[in-house]
Amino acid sequence: MGFFSNDAANQSKHTTTTVIAAGCSIIGSLRLSCDMQVDGYVEGVITSEKTLIISAAGRVKAQVTADKVIINGLFDGELFANTVEILPQGKAMGIIHSDDLCIERGGSFIGETQRTSQDQVVSLAKPEHEDAAADNRIENKA
Image (cartoon, rainbow, N blue to C red):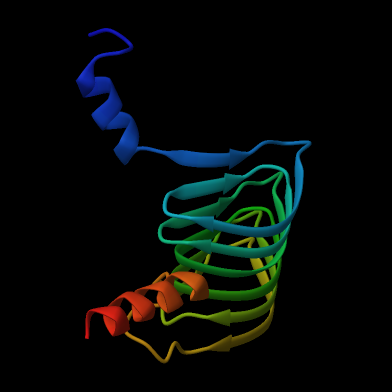
């Protein structure tokens, strides 16, 4: 199988992970439809349809919305997720909105937990300008 075969392209679509490497800092808003691993520093807002992994070297100071969050580094902020795991080196501070929280021995959490009010936490809404454009198309057809 070559690098440019169709099978390789199809496999990569299903296994995509965005990595913020050690030594890299990002401040702002991130919106992803794939898994994300943070080995560096991220501050701001993170919205992911899949899993966010904060490695032992990773630092995140943000409002996070994701399907699953695995913390083995440092998290500070507000977190909305269906599943949250704090691993032995993980330290979390802030507010966690989840019905499925696991803190392994050695991991720590200082803050507040709240139940989720929806069946699913992650549902990426269209940006407002897309909704307005769709409304205009519907009105023009009528």
